Image (cartoon, rainbow, N blue to C red):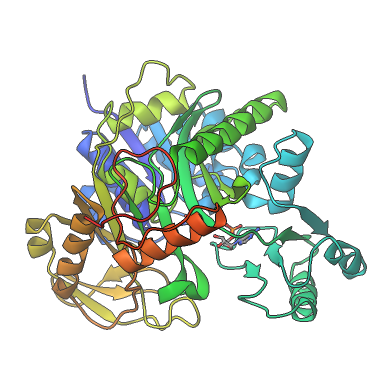
Amino acid sequence: MSPMRVLLVGAGGREHAIGAALHRSEALLFVAAPTVNPGLKRLAQEYYPANVEDGPAIVARARQCRAQLAVLGPDASIAAGVADSLRQAGIPTLGPGQQAARLESSKAFAREFLARNGITATPTFRIVKAPGELDAALSAFSGEKFVIKPTGLTGGKGVLVGGIDFPTAADGKSRALAMLAESHGQPIVLEERLEGEEFSLMAFVDGKRVVPMPLVKDYKRALDGDLGGNTGGMGSFSTRDHLLPFIPASDRDTAVHVMEQTVAALHKEGMDYRGILYGGFMSTARGPQLLEYNARFGDPEALNVLTIYEGTDFAPLLLSVAEGETRDVFVRFRRRATVVKYLAPPGYGATSVPGGELQIDEATLARNAVTVYYGSVTPGSRAGSVVMGTSRAIALVGEGSSLKDALNRVEEGIPFVRGEYSQRHDIANAIDVTKRVTRMNSLRGIEPKPQGLVDNHTRSGPQPPQVFS
Ligand code: AMP
Ligand code: GLY
């Protein structure tokens, strides 16, 4: 059989990881993106300059490379309805159409859609369209225990959390008024502030079936200890049992069920969702609650799961999702832990300082089993160097038999990247993970035992901390 011709749209770290997985499955890769990702450039047969939101232009590129499958990486592309243009042109596409993509592109739509379909694992919310509605909406919450969200796409950076981003209800009210004033007529969403630990659950969705991937913990705040601004994600981890040390199988199963209900509701309302559905959940004392949906792979989460993907070849898998028929495919992930760490320009999460150069010794990193994915960078002045843009620059990914092992690989790899960058130092480390386990146990009323902690391998329920291995 001749190799499948695939057009990949987008050029961030996520798309580099998707492109690498397609390349491993011997697809012929074509890339359409506004910037040149040095990693994707090496893998691609052709690299087309393109506006990822321009449906007709993407269709033209898909025709030019005789694509048998188009894969949409970025939220902006999906929100703009590029999947609809590609499907109308007869090209099987991984990525939902514009109507269904409102689950991500309009938080107001998402909340109302879930409510009218009786999907209740969500925080209390209010949609505010005008300043005069604000006081009534705020009366639904206690004090500063609420969260303010712009309805549209913000790259994960626009959400304000009471007690962290604003100290009092009065401050929250002025932040909400300011957000409304800048929202160009779009509503904002206020939500009950939930307490708990977050996890990301991504699934392949072929219109009917939900095929889940391993859970991933994303570190969204810029600074250690979950301080600093919300970012796209500074790093992430996944464990050998595909759960998380603070998330039991029962919470994962509930979250999968919420996604199944959502896909059934989309179907009922006439929306055919073919692509990746990403649920950002918070595990709370009342079980997992949905914070947000994304209509695409997560970044960095895609880097974790695609590293350990070992089922049916990846290109045929994505094609079966795009064609609405995953029934016979074999989706499997290795029982290995993964850690992703992003290196970002100085100031990322507040005021990014672009232009710095990174020198990357990729050969040594590869010998140490560390994979490098390129994000917001352009080729530098020397071999192996890149210049950072304003967003996350490069990701180092380690895989191991335990979380500690995967983390050690990444940590040992970091000195092989030289330059000035920002990073988080606590991603997947024992102190951070123990803190999260302890916090979840105390929320669930489980007595802690005075010990260290392990990667969870085989357990299926919440447990006190054990020894980190
Ligand atoms: P979102 O873009 O909706 O995922 O929000 C970005 C981040 O804000 C999430 O990852 C959480 O850390 C935080 N957040 C969002 N909604 C809530 C909520 N209802 N309660 C507590 N934290 C939240
Ligand atoms: N890591 C969060 C996202 O991809 O939206």
